[in-house]
Amino acid sequence: MIRVVLVGAAGRMGRAVEAAAAAAGDVEIVARVDVPANHVPGAGLWSEDTASVAGRGDVVVDFSTPRGARDAAAACASKGVALVSGSTGLGPEDEATVRAAAQRVAVLRASNFSLGIAALRLALRTALSAVPVSWDVEIVERHHKLKKDSPSGTALALSDEVREARSLPGSALRHGRQGMAGPRPAGEVGVHSVRGGSWVGDHQVLLAGEGEWLELRHVAQDRAAFAQGALAAARFVTTAGPGWYTMEDMLRAPGRAAR
Ligand code: NAD
Image (spheres, rainbow, N blue to C red):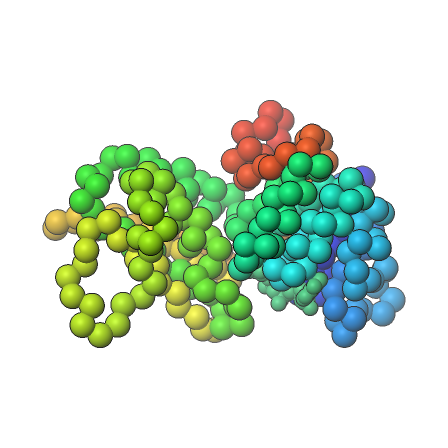
């Protein structure tokens, strides 16, 4: 059994991980961390402090907030417990704390744990190497109306793929357009966030040439897609040494346990 400490346990993703773990058979949630108002009486051990319960697990799985991710990373580093983190919207200090934990324990961080997005990233790299650099790239993402950060962490990861492939600086990102924006400059990567309803996660990458365009799109219909990937990541990090890992590392691992 893999013992998991679940951070953000009462949230939408926390509940999806809980359900996936119950169905998996090889994963046990041994402690849950959330703000006190969201603790569920009678449903196992709850805490508001990851540091006080991290040592009970083999791995901490975090889907909470930037603060929750930072506290989870610090707790994992001090207790020697692996970390799987999916929280998005992290600031530089949060990122630095999560990165620092990877010097002491195995850390797998991903802005999107679905296998379909991992495949989309590979497909995007191939498409970018095949079309002329003059083709314009625009990313459109849609999420539910309660999402806190914009653009999504996944849209930023996809824009990183484009910038890396084309050696573009961070300033190449164009977040929406308004007013007399004028003709589209070359070397821009447009990123557009749509918010509403209950969309779980929809990412489109549009590559537009003269007289033709290509669209790569992934739609997450259910959070179960992320939860399954997070459990596969939990299995992976519990067998890995200290270091920084990505979804691709997990997918490439021999005999990976993704289900
Ligand atoms: P949510 O708001 O439904 O849940 C977040 C939970 O975290 C809440 O229960 C909240 O009370 C709790 N929380 C707040 N502060 C905390 C703290 N300091 N410590 C512990 N818990 C705390 O949000 P959600 O939709 O479940 O998403 C959670 C995070 O995961 C977001 O950052 C979201 O963008 C991200 N996310 C990532 C993926 C992925 O695949 N990487 C997929 C979906 C969502």
